[in-house]
Image 1 (cartoon, one colour):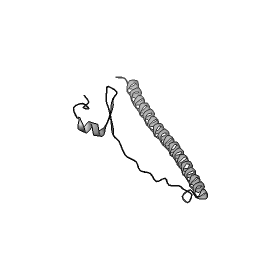
Image 2 (cartoon, one colour):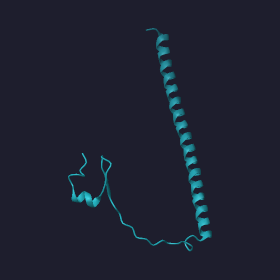
Image 3 (cartoon, one colour):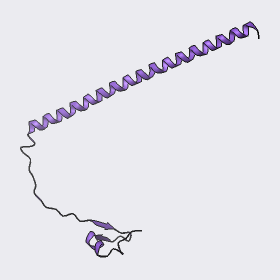
Image 4 (cartoon, one colour):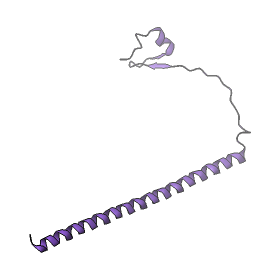
Length: 105
C-alpha cells in the first residue's frame, strides 16, 4: 500500500465523520426549530380558545341566562325497540314474552 493511499483513506474517514457530525447537528437544530414553532402555535391557539371562552362567559353573565331560564317539567317513558330483519318492530315487552321470535342470528 502506498503512502498516498493511506493518506487518502484517513482523509476520507475524517471527511465522512465531519459530514455525519454536521448532518446530525443540522438535524437536531431543525428538530428544535420545528418543536419551537409547534409549541408557539399551540400557545397561540390555546390563548385564543381561552379568550373565546372568556368572552362567551362574559356575554352570558351580562345576559343573566341563569335568572331568566325557564324550566319545563315533563315526564317521559323509555321504550326499547328491537329491530328485526323482516322490518317488524317489537317493543321490549313483546321481546320478553316471545324470546324465540325476536332472537337475531
